[in-house]
Length: 115
Image (cartoon, rainbow, N blue to C red; front, side, top):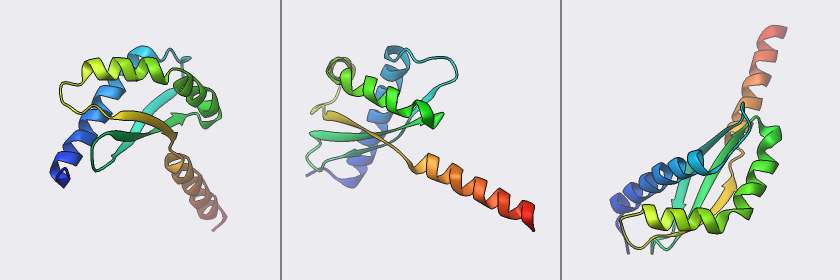
């Protein structure tokens, strides 16, 4: 079992290394921003869920599809980059929280305008 501090450091390392890989590997159109928002890791450190946000959100489906299709290549690059063991098996998920936060901000702005 890994300690909470070790898991936190591991999550940060995963975010940093995968962020670099995605920046180099994903050839997205200009104006599309792909960000790793968080990484959750299993207690045994063998599995990681990586949450990705995409702006504008209309492009999220295409970006997430490309990530899923390229998961093997991305995992291989990630395995080579990581200097610690075990290297977790990664899984990408779309993070809807930034989108939801943006929607709430828009609603708040509209209510302020109507006051």
